[in-house]
Image 1 (tube, rainbow, N blue to C red):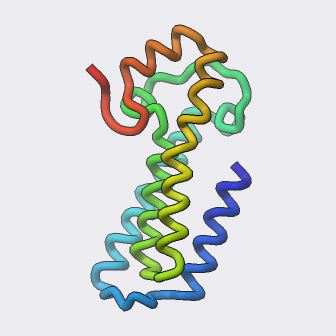
Image 2 (image 1 turned 45 degrees about the horizontal axis):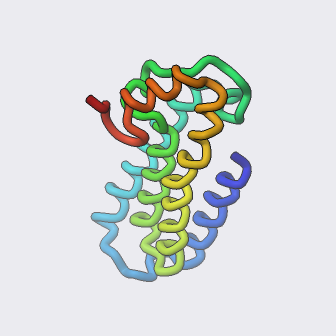
Image 3 (image 1 turned 90 degrees about the vertical axis):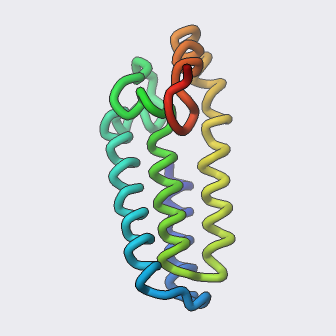
Length: 141
């Protein structure tokens, strides 16, 4: 979690230092970027709140499969991706955008690393959950 906080700080710093170097129109950057950042924060923090900060940090707890987790196994990461994408648009920074893409890739790849741990922790319950709910979006049939 601390490494992701560092990622966001670096993205912020680079985006601010190279603000709008791509000269994208403010009429597009601001509404789209801010909406994605605010929406992403709302989704990420709603996921943390439902899961609890302890569980998010790796403590053993019951498997959460309701609320947001009924639609996605990783709503927090979807929110984080939206935040980064929003910042890429808002900052319009030629230097920040490649870093943002790297950050998005990290949030896409992280669940793959966590899944084996969750499967060991929750066994058949987790495997059944994976069959029912998509890693990122929507319900499986």
